Structures are given as C-alpha cells and as structure tokens.
Length: 147
Image (cartoon, rainbow, N blue to C red):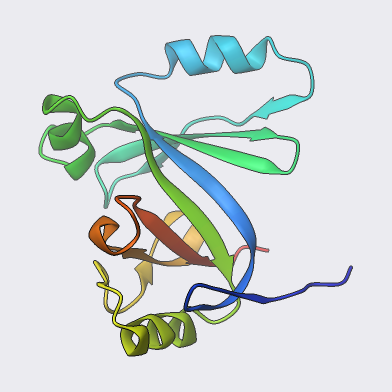
C-alpha cells in the first residue's frame, strides 16, 4: 500500500480522513439504523473511563463513525449534551507525526485546544484544534498507534 502525505492548510503530514465524532445520549438509534444497513460494521461499545464516556464505533466503507455517550454525568460529553450540543462533534484527520503537525499549526498561528498530544481511544495520540481557527469546525488530529 502506498501512503501519501499532504499539507492540509498548515497541518503537516496528513495521510487521510480518520473519523467523524458524534455525541449521543444513547446508542439505540445509531445502532439500529447502522446494524440494519448492508456493508456497515458496528463494533461493541468500548468504555473509556478516563473520559467518562462509552464509544460505539461503526465503519461505513473506509469511513469510521465514533458515537460517544456519557457514562459519567460530570464528563465533558455529558455537559455538552445538557446544553443541547448533540450530533456531529468533530472531524478527525490521521497524521504521521502529531508533534510536527502541532508545531506547524503553532507556526502558522492556528489556535490549539491541545498544545501537546494526549492519549485517546485505542492508545492513539490525539490533539484538538480550536474551532475558531477553522471556520467553527472542531478538528481532531490522530497519530495511530493501533494500526
């Protein structure tokens, strides 16, 4: 397989689209819709206790959907749902070197929500960019460690 990297507006080393994160109160609706769809793979929910959420992954072709529901009422996801912020939450891109990507964004003046990477689902390194710097869209960078 040939992997190509691109420069996506200052994000160095982007190798592709990773997933779309979606906030939900429960998994019933997405699970029933997606499980009945031919060609869609729905995984078992995975607890992420450090984040106070449970994640349901679904793959539609090469695209992953990350449905997040709160398990802790004090979690960020629970607080967002309380304010009516549900549905699409973020768009994620896979990067080769998250440190280099963040350095390039800092140099370009993009506001970073996570100035240093942190561990996310499956032990991958992740970092979020502030939506104000990218037309109101929350962007997540993912350096895969689980491949």
